[in-house]
View 1 (cartoon, rainbow, N blue to C red):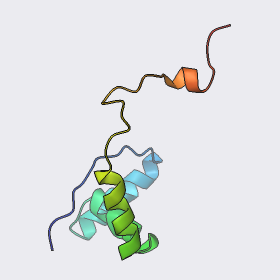
View 2 (view 1 turned 60 degrees about the vertical axis):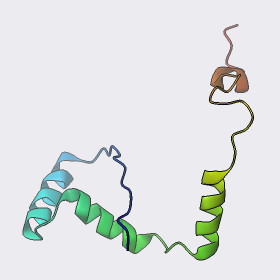
View 3 (view 1 turned 180 degrees about the vertical axis):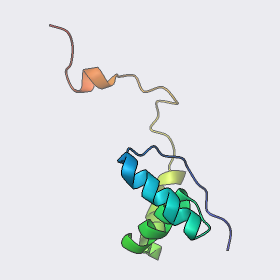
Length: 83
């Protein structure tokens, strides 16, 4: 089994919870990241083959024809122009 790619995220947690997580992680000889990963894997359903195929198709789809630059802005889409 090849190792999974990882990405950093930022979480905002209560200070007392962070302290408790640090203690628990030390007791289990792991990290807070390891604890959260373990819990997340228990609550997220496994990816089935159809979901995996869909993800591969999305990731390998050709670009939209605009190259790397989309010709409109988020403000234009949501009509956030100054009035």
